[in-house]
Length: 219
Length: 200
Image (tube, rainbow over all chains, first blue to last red; front, side):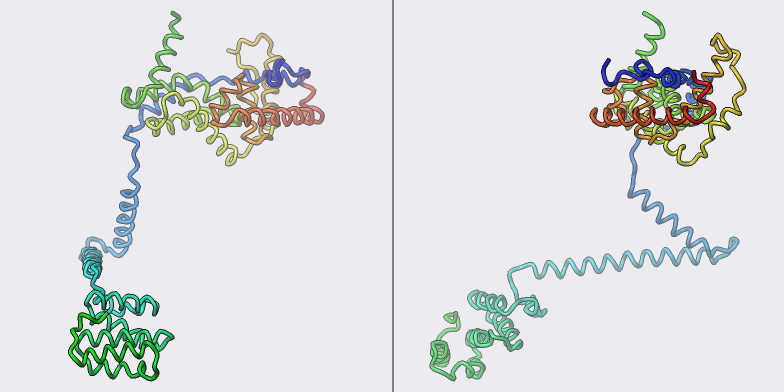
C-alpha cells in the first residue's frame, strides 16, 4: 500500500476505520436538489460587469440627496430651496474649477516656448541657482535677447552671492547690447578696479560702445 | 447507453459551456443537478450540521448563480468546492457548536426507511458519525478539507490539488498532518469518553 492509501482501508485500528465508515450516513435530504434548482431559477441573470465608478458616483449622489433631504419639511418649499441651493453650489464649483483649469492651461502654454522673458518676468530666476541663471543669461545674450539677459543678471546680482562679478559682466554686456552705454559704464565700475583680464575686457567693450560698435557684436 | 450516464454527460457538457453558447440559467441548473450531492456532502463533512447543510448548499449555488458567467469552463467543481469551504468556515466561526452529548440526545433512533439490517448497528453508526464530527471539528479547516476529501470522498491527491487550487506537495503535507492529528484525537477521545465503549 502507498503512503496515501485511505485510512479506511489501511489503518490498523478497527475503531478508526469504523469512525471513517460512519460518513456513509451523509446523504442529502430528498427534495434538496429540487429546492436548490428553484432557488437558482429565481435569480436575475445579468452580465457580470461591475461599474465601480458608476457605483461610486451613485453612492455619492445618493448620500448628497440623503443629506439634503434631512432638512425637508412635509411638502414645504424648503425642500426645493435646499435642493436648489445644493445644485447651485455644485454647478458653481464645477464652473470655477473649469475656469481655473483653463487659465492654468493658458498660462502653461504661453511659457512653453523658448522665450525665457516671461519666466524671467514672473521671477522664474528665483527658482534657478546662480550658475544656472548666469548660463541662461549668457544664452539669452547670444540669442539677441539682451533684455532677458539683463533681467537674469540683475536677479543674480540682487542675491549678492559669489557670482556677483560674473553677473556684473553679463549685465554690462546686456546694457551695451541694449544701447544703454551710460548705465553700462556705471554698472561696470566694480569690474574696473584692477588690471585683471576681466577689467581689460570691460574697458574694451565700453570703448567699443562709446565709439559706436554695433550691439550685435556683444557676446 | 445507460440513461443516467447519458444525462450526466449531457449535463457536464452544458455545465462546461462558455457563456456565449449557453444561457446562465441553463448552466447553473446543470451545475445543481450534477454537483448538489457533492456540495451537500462536502458541507456536511466540513462541519455544517445536518439541519443546516441544505440551506448552506443552496447558498453555494446562489453564489455560483450570481457569478456563473465568471466561472471558467472546466473549473466548476473547484469553484463550487471552494465556495462551500468558505461557507463552512463562516458557519464554523458563527454558529455555536453542539457538544457531542447534545447531539446524541437529539438522535431519534434509526430511520425506518433505512436499509441497514440492524437497529443497533444503525445507532452505532450514528454515534460514530457524531464522534467523527467532534473529532473533525478540532482540526483546522485547511487540514480538514484535505482529510475529508481524501479519506471520506476517496478523492485522488491530484484532484484535491485542483479542487483547492494548491500544489500537490501542499496537499500531501496537509494530509500527513491531518492524519496524525486525526489519529491522536481519536486515541484521546476513545481513551476517555464513555462513548468510546460503543465503538468496538
